[in-house]
Image 1 (cartoon, rainbow, N blue to C red):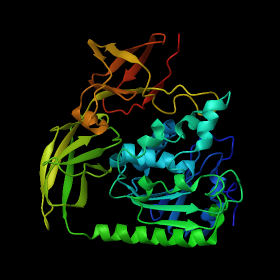
Image 2: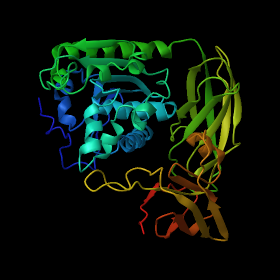
Image 3: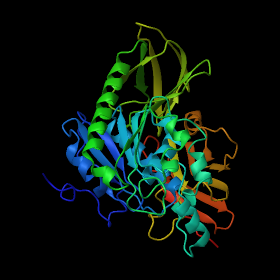
Image 4: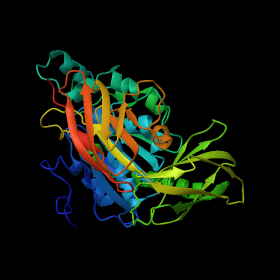
Length: 452
């Protein structure tokens, strides 16, 4: 068998490549493995060698351990959607060790409804209650890593992980070790994480089950007993997914027509936001295939739903449609897509040297006062949406200009060149020019503001 290095797993000089993704095989279920503090994808060698790779496709998220865990969660969420839109898989399993589990839960709690394809989460030796050693380091070390702040018991990040429950469609399993031969300062635990932290009641209450092993913080990743249970969990997740496909419920079709004014244009990201008309129940984010004019979805619980489309560089008409889903029936709704000019961007996170490249993720905290776009007789100014309760997909489907959580977008622009000017407290004024062409996809441009 080839070694992980020969198969392309990233080493320490690959921080700019957070995912290892071999050639995608649509016949296999992707499993994303997330390492812990001071770890790497190499930590998952035993799992890599002992899962059924004729059925599962292992992927790995590689991140700098000292970086802000919230920033790494934002990065992971962004990269997951890149993969989802590229490969259109219908499910993804996630397995995380130690601190990596906190990053995964942050994604699921903050963005879970936008990631309905995540069906399984297995945490191993996770410090759900934080780490006292991180708290000690913050108080007494002359140099403090951002992740230490996030790992403090009772700190903002740890508490944010439990302000909401995991999405109902995610099967969660909690695994931990109880052999302490590594750290005599811990009266109980696995030598690295205290037992009270691993078995935090908030995490246990959401687990399908919790299971302990006579392993320490490192050996638990190379235990035959752990792998035997893990493979059983995978089989259970497979059965649960198959049962869901055959559960009672109705289906519906989305038909697409195009008003491209004679232009040959390439469709990009197309999403459908499905919301119960009653206001009760979860919203569904569905991915449409760009090459198909007809997409069928379901099953869903019978009832009335509001459907809204996001088609990036196209405007959907009408803006929303009502669909009634009934058992045994397959109604159709039709959207007409018309090209529109769009300018996307985001204020890039200011990161410490050696953690992660600037511009990798949006910065939600920069005090931007306004963003002004001008050109072709158009002049618009947008301001940060600071009110609570805004939903990113709700804003995107509105078709309006917005600036939210570091992201901004100007829509419905005629073709031409535009100037963007950004004013932010504590930063020099930013001005740059961009070309816009209706129907042509423009990437979300990272913008790094310079401090005074």
